[in-house]
Image 1 (cartoon, each protein chain N blue to C red):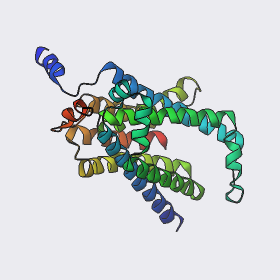
Image 2: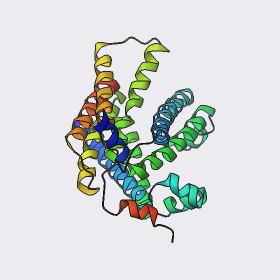
Image 3: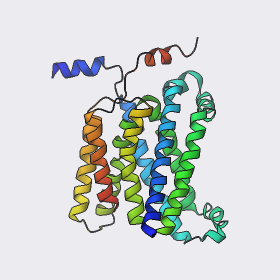
Image 4: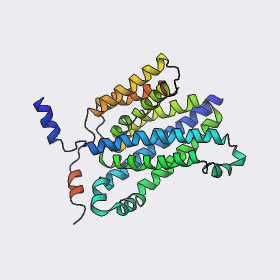
Length: 152
Length: 126
């Protein structure tokens, strides 16, 4: 127990609770944004290539507009996470959103739960569990001094 | 050959979204921790640094391309093939590209994780 705590304290790139909140924000903004967008577009109906100007009108649908706002929130939190951790950490760690969507459809929408879905949930969750137990960023010489010395 | 056409579009989605994500990651790493920067210099400085970064602008171009490739693929084939195939494959291509172009240490732990998520997303989204 003690060596692990020591490692955690001395790690230069430790993931603080605030950073876990940013990862959570990515998951929530992305899944809510996508759901809102797809719900809105289903209400708008199919748009043909010849009448692409209808896409502009689609933005005025409140669900589509809400989806766009939520996806802007996703972009902001995604960029923030990428500024302090690796791409190969952020992408798997936030794939928990797929599990969230599957669980929502199972428990809120009472969709049929196939064995394949449970296997998918298990696979994604174990991938997330494995990556989040490792370091969040590749340590580089000079990466700390850059943040400290950016303003003279 | 509608399947060949669809897979070409899927390859286009995967490659351009990977390029976009790698460039975004590079831009944000060069800018540094934006939380700290916001506390020191304010939100306006952060936005200015991000929007003026050449890698960020290039990334937006690639992500836009991948979005239109997705729309194209969806107009040719089923969503149940296009979405799981492209999203799950991009976890693997991102791991390759991040170790190659971003010099991230993609160790065994991260490879296993990327492959598990790739398989899981393919099963869940299908």
